[in-house]
Image 1: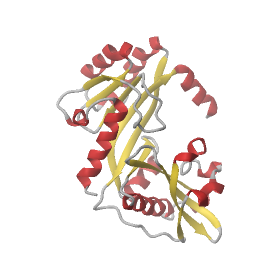
Image 2 (image 1 turned 180 degrees about the horizontal axis):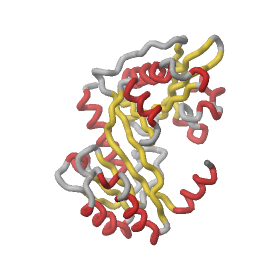
Image 3 (image 1 turned 45 degrees about the vertical axis):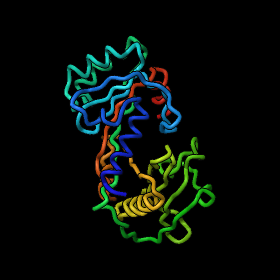
Image 4 (image 1 turned 120 degrees about the vertical axis):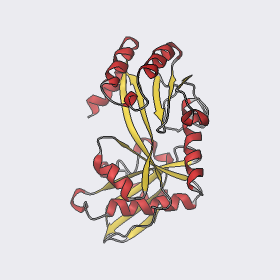
Length: 257
């Protein structure tokens, strides 16, 4: 798999998720489209979006409910593709969303592997490739980024670091769509800063590529530790996304925190 092919696959998936064309992500103008469900969309997405903004660093694609199309278009016309994803512009988007009972909820940065930088990094502890039958016992709070209990049927592969019989670091991936598998990683607090996270992440990424799937990595912009792990593991920033959800959804998330 070549570097350009990896980017094209990611853009094709984003086009499916957003309901647009792949070319819209590197066009000369912003694009506003009606969000619609799609059988090949990432499985954890709840489509249709009320409002979602996606950018690969050029223009912005807004995928929105029909009632919000004009508001989304006005927002993209007012701000640059960079400003659309940060405050103070996001305060304006919030104001536009409130009459519809929605708020900005998810703000994330996504990473794709850079093939010339991706390599199996060393680890101070033995690593083991794990299949679904081998990681079933690890659906525990300390491994909630690597494995998702709510969507355990999507988890397909993992790499664990072991101190004797004790699992100390784990990178897992979920088959979120046909062509791309998402990586999540956890390391026990007392074992951090030893390169374990980058080791399990890089080894898992290479295993995913061997299976002819594209590994991708996501974290909140404020999660510096996770972003550093992505870069150390051979990943580079590829696209950003902001998603609005209903106020009830946001309130429930705050209660769970």
